[in-house]
Length: 349
Image 1 (cartoon, rainbow, N blue to C red):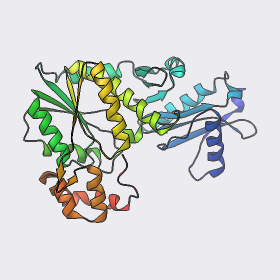
Image 2: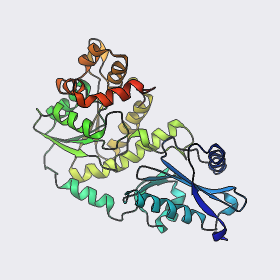
Image 3: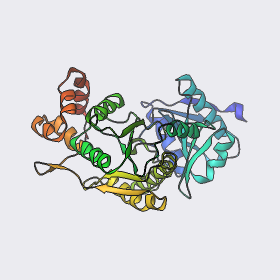
Image 4: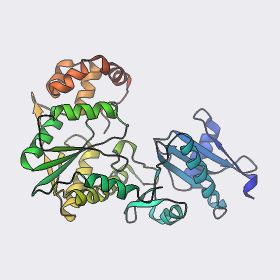
């Protein structure tokens, strides 16, 4: 029976097939993820979509088989096709998120569990020692000290608010591990964000910088396709992120995590609430730092992006350190500034 079915790529312009894919996903209780860069579909002899799967970056997503065809091994075919496609484009280290009930199935296909939140989600990778090797590498920068803190930072771009948070943590602790979200899902590319973070904190001697790697996932690309609503997505992302962060913290002897207060963002506000509940359970203090204000305006990266978009350079200057300001005035910043001006929504997340 298998040989009668064929898999083909679905192009964004193919409205008819995309409608079939959406209908199939919906029928199987899945919504199409907002972040996808490749989708395939399996047709039966009558050109009906009976299985589908997608990729985004180095992740596999939105995989479903019509329940009338379950037990025929179609999901194996879809996963094999996606893995082959990923290998061809140079992505050898692959990740997926799945319901707890499907984790064993993917385990049989060569995926290994990184972290799980019971009844919600399992995060898996195709390397048996991927996460443990990552922890081993981090452990090389462990320093034995009474007070060791961590900050996880996207910095899109690095503002006086970020600088204030790092300075406060550095003043109150012997050592601060600063994790920079290295996924490229922001208007400012990672190479630039990293440079601005390092230049803006160069005056602090007790920092250790880390690329977050593929294990600390930004909210921007967290998969939402099998969660029932936006709030469930944020909560499961926060819980999963904290399960992973807790493992990192224990390897590095981290006893506190500093986060900026989020009066305006619903997403980060909910995330912080989950963090304030979960981290102490794992023996890690969660320190929420009130936002810095300049000229009565709360300092935030989204305010900076919006000010850039509107050409309000006086406001930008009030919100960022000299190191970020100098970059924004440079030739290197021009393609980023052009992107921000064209972007419809620069405030998101």
